[in-house]
Image (cartoon, rainbow, N blue to C red; front, top):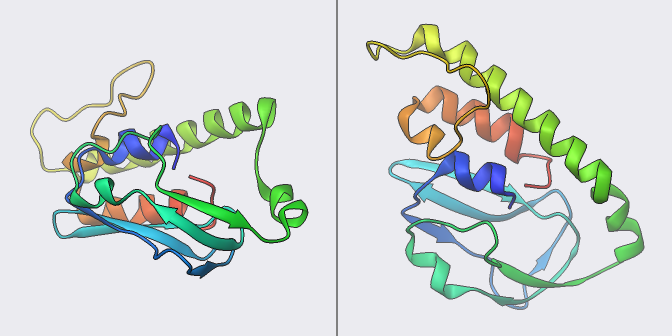
Length: 151
């Protein structure tokens, strides 16, 4: 999970983690998190077998993107790695995703019924961004940013 997704989602109420020994496939659900009545699913960046999981994360709270979620013994790493981003490509991808997120939020402002809701100039404040937005925006975030991506 990237810092982008972790910061935008904010505090979580719990995680559903994979099980050690479980086989996963690149692009398929790896784990999900819960925030209130909403869930978000994250896909596996590569195929392989789950070796261990960080059970301490399952109880919720602030999810630090630098924390490990699970350790995977890769299968056909030379094939899986082709879909991953590294170095300059990862930086460009992150900026592109941030720009798309800012566009998504800007499109939702007119729909929001919160008095005084405005889009700030400059960088998008990511911390807990989705907590204040509606379920439709949460679903759009999940569809556009979590499914078939390497967050």
